[in-house]
Each structure stands twice: as C-alpha cells, then as structure tokens.
Length: 425
Image (cartoon, rainbow, N blue to C red; front, side):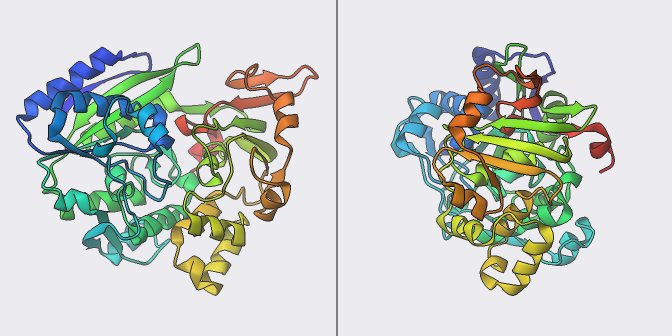
C-alpha cells in the first residue's frame, strides 16, 4: 500500500511538511509498542534520513526501541557522526550491525532464477540474509528509511536493498555485488528493474512478507543555488513507493550530456568519503559520460584507506583496479578473492577498463599506494590550487587558461551519462 506520495522536479518539501506527512502515516498505522528504525549510515548523510529518524523518535519516544544503521560492510558510525546525523537521539538507542556473524538467513533464491534474470551472467543461488534484530527483536513496526538515487550495484538504491544489503550478511552482500558487476554496471545504473532488484523482490515476496516493514523513501536534488532540497517523499509497505521515487529520481538526479566529456573533476567531501570503496562513486556515476581517452580527476582530501572493511582493503591493495578480464582471472586463481565477491565486484566497478584515465589526489595515501592499485596520482594541494572547489560550479567550467572541465561537487547524489551511451544500454 502507498500511504503517502508527493514529489516533482521543482517541489521543495520543508521539514515541517515532511514531519506532518510522516506523523500522519504513523498515526494511520495505529499504536505500536516496539519500533525498529533502519536508516542509512553517515555515508548517506544527505539522504535526510537522519531528519526522518528524528521525527520517528519524537513521535514514538521510548517505543522506538532500536535504531540499526544499514552499514552493510561500511565502518561503524562514530559518536560524532551519530550526533550530527541523528541530533538529540540517545546513543544507547543505536545498534551496530555485525555483517559477518550477526545475521539470519531467511531463505535461498534458487540458482535457476538468478541465472535467468542475469541472462546467465552468474550461476548461483542467493541467500536472503538480514540482521538478527529484524527477526529476534520482537518489533511490531520496522521503518526502513532512505534515499532513492542511481546506484552502481542495483540500478536505483534503496527499498529492499536497505534490508538485504544494508543489514545483510557476507554471502548475500558478496553475491549481490558480484551479480551486478557481472551483468554490467552500465546496463543497470539509473534503472529500477535490474537483475539484482529482481532477486531482492523475490526475497521480499517469498521470505520477508511477514516482516512489518514500512519504507520511507526520499528523493534529493539541488536547486539553482546548489542547495540540496527534498524533492520527493514516498511512504508505503510495498514496491509502489520505490517505483514512484525511482521515477522522480531519474528526473532529478540524472544528467544527460549531449557530447562525451573530455575532462571531469570530482570533489569528495572529506566528511563523507574516507575510502576508495566509497570515493569510487566518482568513477561509477560518471563513467557513462566520459569520452574514450578522456580523463577523470578525483579530489579526495579525506581518503585515507581503500576499503571500509580491513580485509576488503587488503584485497584492494593486493589485486588493484585492473579491469574485468584480470579480476575474473584472479578469481579463478586465488581463492581469497573468490571467497570475497564484494571485493571482486568493487575492483571491476573501479576500473575504467582502459577507456579513460583515472587520477586520484588523496589527502592521506601516498603516491606509491595509489599507483599500486592501478590509478594515476597527482598531489592534492597542487590540484586543489588549480581546481578550487570554492570557485567551481557544478557542470561546465572554463579555466583562466581556456581549459574546459566538467565539475561535480558530490558524485553520490547523481548519475551522468552521454545520451547515446545510455540509450545504447
């Protein structure tokens, strides 16, 4: 059922309007005694999920028993991040997702179904894994809160991804990521109907139908001044809320360029991007817009590691962003990579396949470390002096010497593509 919907390319939903919409739905749902909220972590700070979690806390008080940030494999949130994103909510209300051992397997999506929806790209079953708190917590309402936006693994982020990946386990996360990589990012990004989404839909229908989940889906876009605005809000307990949000997100978050871009400069906010695991959104979200033999420059002042998880970080260092054929060969040769398909998928995602160059300018990694994973390197200070985020605007910029660049201030909130490349996929 779709409980609330509002949104358009020009809508601006003010905080008090958003609160009234959520409170109206919560009142209509009736009294609840034990509520669990599942918002994203700090890497999705701009989703406004923190605000909606606060609204739910204000409404339920002590009946909002648990808040489980959907970490997936990301690093746990710090106390400072909790305070910034979920202002005023006591820290003892938050639970830390243990993706390695704190999960329950609800069922198995059959291999023949996964093989069929992926056009034979993979041939394995998929376990529907969720954090044990969803099963053992005795909750009579689960609020899954998050932003619908183009995504490299599933096409459009959120809805059941928040559940089965955000609170998922190692096998489920690994296999879903590799399914997306094997099928092909560029065949999926910006699309609501993808092989990974179909697998998660199967899991929802067959294994999670009894979970009392209500989805709160946001769509975030920039206004003419560059400020982020809540453009859409969709609340429901089925897939309709996701589909409506995805339709709006394509209009709000997807920029089609008429000609391939020769030089793209992406800035990674140091508060949001600490690793290439996250920072490579600069690659994922721009790859369909960049010209053959083009250049991507990544200004990454906060990047200090490769993986959010230590073992994944080690695998990135060991194998590098070397392109699909080399990663697939390494999978067959090295069991440690074959046993961590998320890392393998990420290595595929993070390569340009030799089509364009990628130059990382990190704040806390050395030139040897960057070149060791197959990226080009440039010193951050020198590149910030030339491409100063304070003076650049999103889109086309012409530098003082006549150089033309395409600047992106936050790759996480959008998707960019050359029209012919997107339509060709």
